[in-house]
Image (tube, helix red, strand yellow):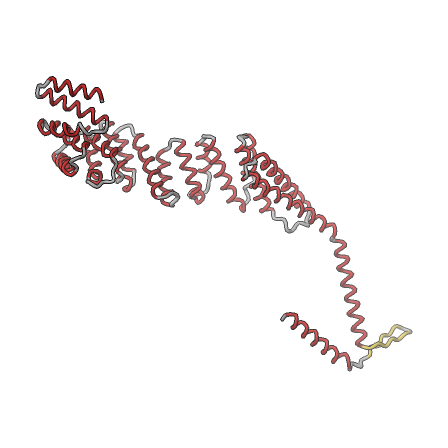
Length: 429
């Protein structure tokens, strides 16, 4: 369609020229004393057009001839730039393939090519297409590739040298994102070298926005856990869980593990209570954390009433007939309550009795009810419950304690033979 339109236009121009020039009888007279030249107007127009065309072609030819040196310089620069990018891409390919020595050499070659191009751009004005910002970014990435290869080869000296040069070359505004990437990679290298202090220092140098990215938070979590900084690690794990960096089950497991470690690091009841209050409400509702916190409080000779108040929120979920709690959690809960049976109140005795009625075949609950009756000097009921429980207990500690309690009950009845037999069974467990 476009060709047809152009053809119609050319025909229109030809018709217009024929109409104007065909009947044009004008004559132009040129006086050049003592000569006089008479030519038609149409011929003059053709001569002028030819002269203009000739001058235009001559000027273009002269311009092309004078620009040949600049074109040659631009061509050489273009070839160097292509070689630079080719070396960089080859270095990246070799790094991904695990050929670290070749990757390091090619990255160094790309750096040399970029330096040559930068010097050529400073001394020549014929490189208008050369971008200093992009070249600076490529040089920074090439240093990063070389440092990554050196890290894989365990050449720490070469790695630090390239890292230093990469950070020095990242002052340009366009290279800010790349600088942040270099710092994150350097933090990972420090973690691989088991040096969490350096990793945390590099992470703290990141801008606030970059420090809250998922990759930075993951690196910080690894560094804080390696440095045994449990509280910052727990805060970081919460942020990662909020950003959905892990699956819900994995996030809960990580947070639970760090909270258990934080509770286990408390050295007195006051510190333990402060740690417990620093946990989130959802964390204080986890049965594992509640039981561990109460157990730790009892181990530190803390307030037994406070420990039982913590356990109250998980007692029903753990002891109900169709509970999803494991036997280990239930046994640990029973052991914690057993440590404070001397000061247990009537409300808790009622809860234990109800749990024993709801789980009549649970030897662990029978054991707890029997020990509670023993502390209350209900000898007959304690004898009945412990005798039933001792035959089915699987936990060695509870089994041993049950036989000891039966030995004490036998001594209370002045039955020396039964007491000796019970102590013997306790020793055999």
